[in-house]
Image 1: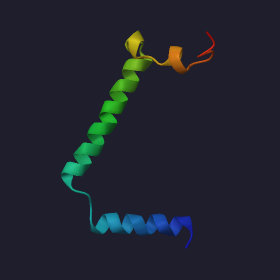
Image 2: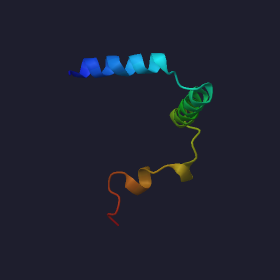
Image 3: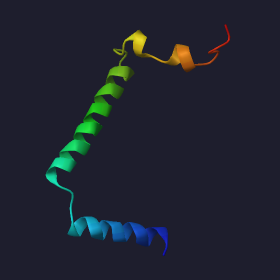
Length: 63
């Protein structure tokens, strides 16, 4: 069985037994939270204390 057939069988299984509405809401909620955090960081509103560039960035540990 090739990888395309595995995905097709998975789609058939999901079509016959779709996830519950609560699970779909949970997944969309997690995606929304991730997008909000990414947007906050992208537009520069993320606080400096929450950034890791000083800890794990280039030159970290070279004191």
